Each structure stands twice: as structure tokens, then as C-alpha cells.
Image: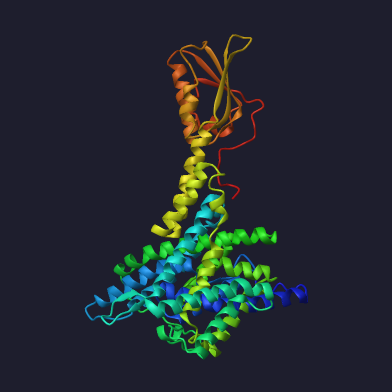
Length: 523
């Protein structure tokens, strides 16, 4: 289970160097996502360290990087806000209860994710169509972008938030554009140092030496470097608390698993290997549960950081372990430096993440793909912005499934003829399932057929119980007219379940195809 992927010295070297690169890029993103969630920077850094370390050791996809993510952070905003309100509504008002409710929710999120792994639900990621994945990443990009707009607000004299104006706005916008420019153009000079790190350091030095008046990380929250400490979330242990955190935990668990398993699938394609989805579910759950007890905001797989790791040569578990341990070193020994990072630099980093996350090619193919697929892309993106990622993906999958069923319902065809014996012969072609049974039954004319009818299923596929009921209904129609119906080449399951038609039909036992009604036996 614990492998450092060190079959060769070069492999271990690549993993370590790649892990260090990822750790440098993790710092600004973890801090930025913490601000998105409405919590202190250290909460995001602890989550990035603990989730990254545990999933690197026990996860089902070596080389994949996990940590605090924007997908989960945008859900946590409402949780923290509502938790703070509940704390102030207590008999003895308590400030900052939202953070404790967040920790409790993260623990429950991890438990739900581990249950998903134990019940082997990870395989269902295969059911997510490509248009849904496109809508998923596009919606995620839009949500992250909207979350950054809050950084353009300041508190006025009345204690209310208002949009920046004048020089503070110009300085903020200028630093953001400069940050984005450095990240974009620096790799053209060299890729030896991550451009994100160069941008953060450059903007920080510029603000410090020029003396620009702009918000810093330290202005929002003080970062104390230290090891995360164990603590049970300080929330009331009651059904009321469970009712409050469970919906958030369910959504976070779904978002975390969906994003992690989608990232796992992507890394599989890039490396030509295969990860273990259910093992990854359990590892993600264990990581979040532990993180909730150690003051972290939880997290999941990070698409951007995983891509950085793979492209930098990190393929083994050592890369993720190195990234997590290096991040801890930054927390312990470089926390004071993090406080000097301008918020504009973090916003610039996040805008680059937005640009890289959004699937721009989906805009070009909207007119080239089927209208249903184009609608799914737009639908999932819209639902993501309006609600959350988990609901959006579920809605997209359901809509895609309905479209698939509708289209395949048209593929059933029945050919009618008369054989040499004078019997009416029907040859069925295509799948028979809940969506096609109406069309299937409409193509039979019992009142016009001979007294002996043969239905050939050699080229048909009986897919579900609705199809079996349709065959039974057809048999009853011929029985009511005192006619005999023979079913040829029917699969064994149908023979066993057609109890009502048992005395009415003759089941041909010769040359029956060896196939089964769709089940999950081989999964």
C-alpha cells in the first residue's frame, strides 16, 4: 500500500522535484481558497497539508494531488455564515461558531465519502458523460471567478461593504493584471521555477519596496506558524446540529468525490495507467475526517495541481508526500512571509486558474455537437452557478440519460412477414426497454395475424423488466383472440419471468443467445 515508486533513482528524483514544485504552487491557492470559504488562511493550509499527505499515502491514484479546492470552498461560505448566525442566536452568544460547524461538517463529509468507497460507488463515475464534464469545469471556473469579486469590496465608515473606487481600485486592478502577465509570460523564459511563485514573490516585493497601499494577507488574518493540533469540533452534540450540517456534508462529499474521480480519470488517460476509484473514495474520506479534527477545511483532488505534478514528471506517491511535507515546512518556518502577500496577487492567481479551468473549446463546438449535448453543457454550467457542483452533475447525468433513452427508443423495428407454413412471422430488431416498449407493441397487429404467430428475438435485446411486461402484454393480446404466439431465441431470464405467458407460448430452446438482462454482477 505504501510505495514510493522508487524502482529507479531517477523516478524518485522526479517525484521529489515535482513535489517541491507543486508545494510552492499550493501555498497561494490554499490561502486563496480559504478566503473564498470565509475562514483564516491557516485553515486552508492545514487542509492542503493533511488531505494531500493522507491521500498521497493511501489513495488509489499515485501522482494525483489533493488539497483545499474552490469547488468545496464555495459551498463552505454559506455553511460558515449560517454557523456564525446560529452561534450568535444561542442563549449565550458565541462568535465564530461557523468555523466549528465547518470542522464538524468536514468530519461528517469524510465519513460519507468512506461509506461511498466501502459500498463501491466509485465505479459510477463512468456514467458521467463528456458534455457533463465540460459543463462541470466551466461552471467551476465561473463560480471561482464570482467568488473573487468579493476582494474588490472594502468596509466604509458605517461598517458596510462597498465596491472599491478611485486609486485603491486602480492599484488592485493593476497588480492583478501584472500578476497574470507574469504567470503567463514567465514560462516562455524558463520553466525551472513555477511562474505562480515568481508572480507572488514579484508582486509582494513590488508592493513592499514601492510602498503601495493595498490589502495584504496579514491585514485580513494573522498566520501563526505551528503544527496542527487535535481537537473535537466545539459544537452542540444534538440532532439539531446534525440536521444543520448533514445537507452541507452530503453536498461536500458529493462534490469532493465527483471532482476527485473526474481528476483520477483524467490522470489515467494522461499516464496510460488505471487508478482505483473506490480506494480513492476511502482515502479522501479518511483525509477529510482527520482534517476536521485537526483544524482544516477539508478538500479533494486538485485538477490544476495534479496536472502540474504529472507534467513535471511526478508519477509516484513520493511526489504527493513531498508536496505535503514541503507545505508543512512553509507553514512552520515561512508563515510571516505569507502575511506579506498582497491579496491582489492571490486574486490574479485565481483568475489564471479560472482561465485554465474553463474549457474554451466547448464554446467552439456548441454548434457542431448534437443540440442535446450543447444544452447539457450550458445546463450544467448554469446549475453549477445557481446551486452547486454536485446537483449540477446529477442534473446533467439525468438529462443525458433521458436523451439517450429517448433516442434509443426510436431504434426498435419489427418486420412482419408470412413464412412457408402460413404462420405470421415478426422479426424484432433493436433494444426493448422502458423507453421503446410503446413503439414495440404498436408494431403488432393481432387482429390481422394468423392463428399461429412467431416472434423472433435473435436480433433484439431484452434489457429490463418493462420489456418483459411488454412481452407478457403481447401474449395476452393473442390469447384473447384464441391465437398462439411462439417466442424464439428469448434470453433465459425472460423465460423464467414470463409466468403469465407460460401456458400461452412455446419457448424455443435451440440457438438461444448467451446474454443476460443488464445487471451489476461484473462490476
